[in-house]
Amino acid sequence: MDINQIIKDIKRCFNDFICEFSLLEKTIININNASKFKDDYKSLKLKFKIIDNYLENIVKKRNFEIIDFSNNYSKIHQYKQHIEIIDSRIILFNTKSLGILEFLPEEMIFKIFNFMNEKDLLTLSKCGINILKIVNNYREHISLKQNTDLYQDVFYQKYLINKKKLYNQEYYTNIKYNKQLCYTMEPCNYSSSFFFS
Image 1: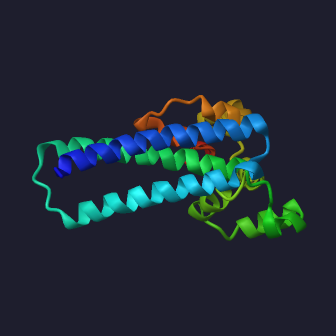
Image 2: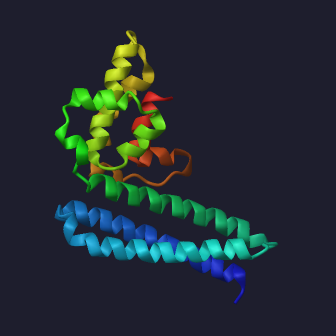
């Protein structure tokens, strides 16, 4: 089979995955019971991983001197990015547990966070919506402590305006994909951008 046709088929599959992941995300919100959809989610992730691995193998093994390939592959990369954003939101909004942090007072959690850099905090914030809230509380605490003129800070003001949206899953399901602004589609990256712009 023509390699261009294979790549086009994969592009179509990835586009279908966007629809399936989006539908699953919306269904979980409407039913408000994520555990019912655990198997559907695992199955969808597995199918996506199989196609994604297949694509990676093609890219590694072939020497592409094809006009169509770069255009198709660029679009596939955008689709893949979109899928990964939706997937990370599904995990974020449906993980309520704080893990070991559940048993610690906020003051002690903040002391632990003092030993972490922003990259670590960003990784941690992706573990669940309640952890993201604590990480953002810590960021606010540090910002207020370090900057006496914070209310003149445009990014901080923007954060305060958007704060409620950051924790609203339904809001994110209506955002259209934009490759230049894809960080705004994912609450953890978007939160981080306010404090480290």
